[in-house]
Length: 251
Ligand SMILES: NC(=O)c1ccc[n+]([C@@H]2O[C@H](COP(=O)([O-])OP(=O)(O)OC[C@H]3O[C@@H](n4cnc5c(N)ncnc54)[C@H](O)[C@@H]3O)[C@@H](O)[C@H]2O)c1
Image (tube, rainbow, N blue to C red):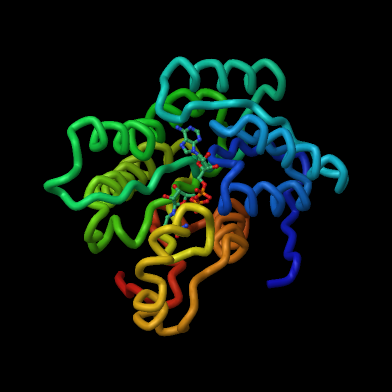
């Protein structure tokens, strides 16, 4: 995929999970398109490095450490963004974990941790970010094919992502009248660190059941997110866009 760009000059984006594969690819694309990107992640060193690299390429990036499942940490993040940048045009909560265990092996604690980071964290961030978002702003959540059809060995993850689909639709219904758009992307199997272990176990089977016969790249997901954030998608709202090479086809 070539180096696409959008006209996002003077926009401010808050990306969580910005040290990761999809969040990182999105940060690079948005920064190249003129956006000031706030890079939030648990991995403080990785976002510092990414911000420096964006800066070297002429972009503007602000790295801020975050525990996406912790209300106080989110309060600190939003407080800093308010003080230093004053507003949020694009909100992309991409931080997430993908634990593996069959249901009879998932501890109550593992279940709660997964919901806390993948689902509660998105709600807590969204509620705190909304006061900084005005008409024309846009939100894109990261759900998953697992949220539509379930996932053997990942029930806690699938449940968190299914919850996010319902949250995104509810959010869209509430913020639409304010001129804020909210959508989600639903990736299939994407080559990032998150899926490395599972791909080592199931990779061949997953590729065989994907009609395009390959996994996706983080850049391919980032491009769809950027499109949804852009004015080109100005009438797309409350939608879940699949980016999965045909692995799962649904309305
Ligand atoms: N990779 C895929 O195949 C795939 C498929 C469907 C959905 N997704 C979703 O896309 C999003 C991004 O995934 P990715 O592939 O880039 O994964 P990744 O593992 O490359 O990145 C996830 C990032 O989230 C960060 N993170 C984890 N817990 C955190 C916490 N408590 N606080 C702050 N940051 C935290 C990690 O440090 C990491 O940088 C996730 O929400 C994931 O569930 C990914």
